[in-house]
Length: 237
Image (cartoon, rainbow, N blue to C red; front, side, top):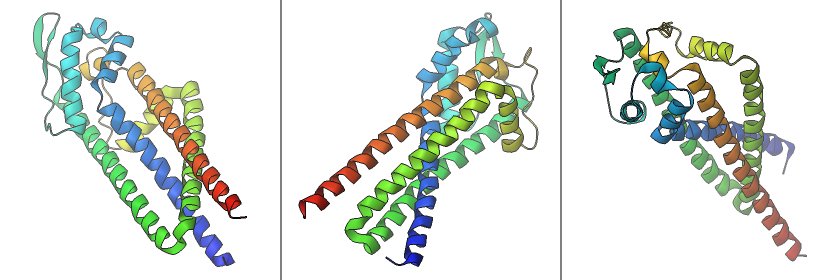
């Protein structure tokens, strides 16, 4: 293989590392966002029922409705619930506007997941045509690089979250919602009370843990592929 070819495949390896990293993170986000059991668990951990006056059974219904809005086909979030025995509309027009933007951001995340998956398949297919049997080694290197990128990125975000999660959360909102419609009074906003800062901190940790686990599985797969290829090579001699 010439030096130009080596540079080319190294560039492909870097690209695929980023693609795999993106696929791992977006898949983890999709899993968490679509799991109402996680919502309910974090509601309980953060004392949402006591804070809002909404019964846990009603919070479960709210979790299902929010999930359907973020990852399903639901197009509105006009939710009513019993609050200390009184039926109320939970979210204001400003909060609904923000949640519409959140839904759009989730939609972009899921599109990115899909595009990453198809890009991975396309590059693998083209690499198979060019490298033939050597493509398995290249695939192992892609997985290994993507997993290591995931580990390092999550470690950096994890350290930043431990030191200054509120500031990191604010920065995320400034970038993701530049229109600035995400600030609400925590004393009166049901959106903030149902999804407090602790909820988001713990869900971020959970996404990180799932991503790390996925990366560890990826490393094991890469190690297995390389070991099998090494065994085949030794058998030839």
